[in-house]
Length: 411
Length: 104
Image 1 (cartoon, rainbow over the protein chains, first blue to last red):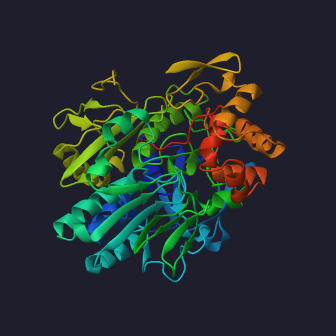
Image 2 (cartoon, helix red, strand yellow; image 1 turned 90 degrees about the vertical axis):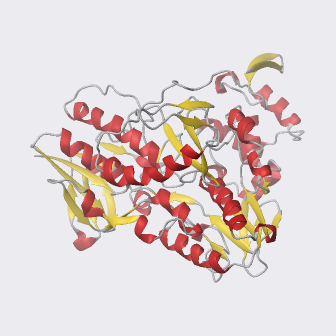
Image 3 (spheres, rainbow over the protein chains, first blue to last red; image 1 turned 45 degrees about the vertical axis):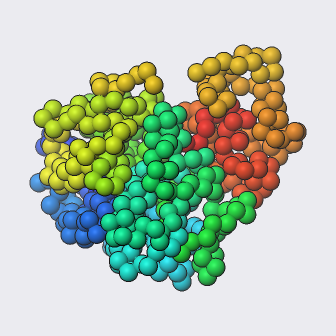
């Protein structure tokens, strides 16, 4: 019996279990481990602060997505021991041996890494929307908030879903306008990057979007600390930005088990080949999804496309054959821009987001780098696709590798 | 995409003057770009950072500031003193690596 062990049952891990349980023969045993019983639809967190989604829209029992024949163990993971091809679980100190291991333990926010952030004002005047609890607390806060300076601050990159902070601001502009209080709200985006848009073509097409919505950008702002009582954020070069409500995107890091196992970089991400996801040090180890140190976005769409490439490759690899598919870093993200509209971006390791039309039989085309109502509905429809098709490894009409079809190349 | 002459060598650069190919980089180019970035002289501390970044660049991308401070032992405050205003971006520029950027 050959053993495949999957660590983490988020988007990537759950998809790997589903794709491979169908592809691998009966002489394989697949085990999936996660510390939680429930699965969160993380892209939905963005909508919770504005009352568009509630808790029940983004949470389901993990067991609904575990395919027959796959063992599902609920336990934290103590340590990965690649030299001995085994993993020790926290629960009962149990050991799990493997022939192959897939690390899909994700990335988490770490507000503890910024002084002043997660102290006595946390979830009072300082909030996050990258956790379910954080998004729900922020929703409660916004319902009664009288207005003032709302500052969105990204602590450092890389972060999960890098467009979410911009989406949050654009939805906030819509939300406060709908409530007739936009004139009492200042919206400020403090980012460590040199601007809200850093890719030349996206910057050209979207550069004016934030200005039109009255969102101020504070570029090159690398936060050192929060002064929670003075209600200001302070950068390493002594810039200060005052706030009444701080919505922080804290530092993102890979899981602590990666650090405990000595497998990560300084942010606990696992180095792997960017086309095949194989570890350069352990040929029977892979990392997928947000846990992997890849030069593309940490996003569900990347996990989705990556797993499709990986699943086909793995069956050959386990038989000692060459891997045929090379992942290209493909990402495909709807960006909410408020007022029932959205944008769509589609890119990979080599091609930056381009304008044009994204073809999708029956439903599309969707406009690329340009607002449309169809993009907004595409984003909302995606939740249904996620629960019913994507996690279960069913066929979606989206190609895993990026295509240039519909994209305009003279920009 | 354009080319420009830096320290007697023709290299390919993007609109903001970042080298497109890290292989075209030389120490002389670094000294020249540092001057344009407002750093008149590169001290051993500057070079330590630049060389560490070049050794630890993945796929031509400069490491993040957090990776640089963890890897070199130089604090973030010192990084701001060495490369004022946006040290990650300045180091990337001087070291001939890609600009730190988001997905859009």
